[in-house]
Image (tube, rainbow, N blue to C red; front, top):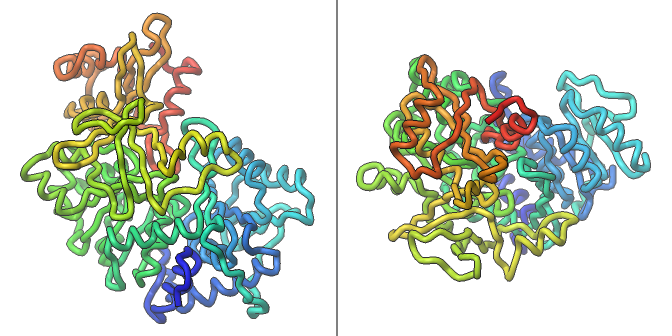
Length: 524
């Protein structure tokens, strides 16, 4: 019986219902585990962690690439009532060291040939008896002697599970740090439980569905994974995204649902022009995490059919701010393509307001900061009461996104406050510039950034990646923009890259692009 709404209780009750149904298949080797097997192995890990002292309030960090182990250890940590601190092996040394120093996890579980130096340093800074660094076998990692080795318990010796309370911190998820120092986002047991329920209502899935995940489980894919496990979904996990392998997996395994960021969707579209494909089994493509090109979204609609579902969320809000449904995509495509630029309407458990600088609600078509209230929101930022007070006020989370409503109640994100460029006293929203640049037939991807300038404060610059086999000059692109947007929004310079620096979840890393100018590699 579900006495309280906690993430722990939902997962424990949900996963026990599906017995011999397949739970997870690891690609490309095809290793499959049923729900019963997943449950039994998770209990063994839980028993192991309890012997290490895991329990309520204990922070356990993981550095595990997409794998069966990443799923099982994440579930076991929740079974213990402990706090999961999921870290990507793709994080930089600075970020890992900062997170370890701030979060001070009592246990760190690693399954990657990375960050050994940082973990050895962390062990040296902590009392050895107060922390365990556990290396998992089977990942081609030669662990240092100071690491402990994980061994599967022969039997379950202790499963006196600590029962989590609704206010316990279930997840400490660190932002990517693309705008500065990583921030630890605290999610309560109740908040994560509410996020699962909201996703289940917004995105119905059941034991007939087959979900393909190729983005890191430590990010948005993890939310879809948890949401899928409580519904008996068969989940297929890839170590990383490869467009050709992805298309082949959809055909071979009759995949019905997946999640991807826009850059992945573009690569998938490009790959369909190079190989035969069969996506007739697909009924959901969730996309989000960064702005999408309207031109390429229409192309995706024409190639894949009416199966696209957009989601707008943030680490702080558990991906449940707003949705643009499949039916809204269909209506917009045929009647009002402008709506394809929107991020839909607020989710069922979420309230959304747009406010001006005085805290007053703005009228439709006027710009305002997006603020959000939801039971799935974060509790606050770990060890940062100053930031918590800044972003959480009177029960509302201030997203830092600038948006607008249309007359039909669709929400549009115009830009991040921090990505807004002020040039000659004029406000330029980088996403608006990108939308113009992306309309050029040669442009595959673009990123607009502000670069410091002694006269203008900042100048508008775009960095562009071109479609294979097509060409374009900086002068041509600037002239293209002059004919289509306001003078102060026209880029002063355009640079071309074969490949963008990306964050671990596939978003263009504007921080790295700004570094190219700061280091003099690119100049105005």
